[in-house]
Amino acid sequence: MTQPVPSPCTSVCRMDEASGLCAGCLRTLDEIAVWSLLDDGEKRAVWVELDRRRERLRPTPVARLPVEDAA
Figure 1 (cartoon, one colour):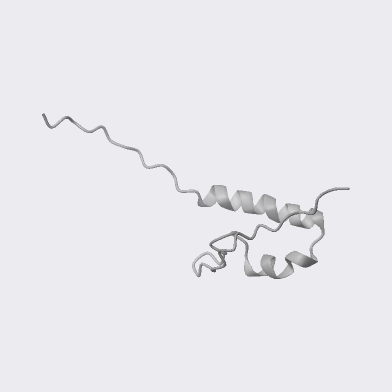
Figure 2 (figure 1 turned 180 degrees about the vertical axis):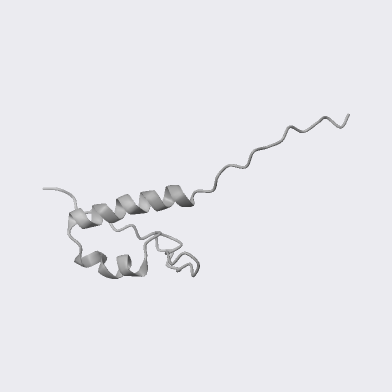
C-alpha cells in the first residue's frame, strides 16, 4: 500500500496579495480549497507546480564586487 500524498501546508497561512500565493506553502486559494478532493495524482501535480514556483521565486544571488584593502 502506498503512503498518502502529504499536504504542503506549513502552518504559515498568510496569503500574499501581490502573488495570490500562500506565504507558507505557495499554493493558491483554489489549490488549498480543493486539496482534500484531489486524487493522489492530482496532489502530486500540485507538488510539482509548487517546486516550479519555489524555483521561480528563489532570490538570485547578488554578485559581490571585490573590496579593496583600505590599508
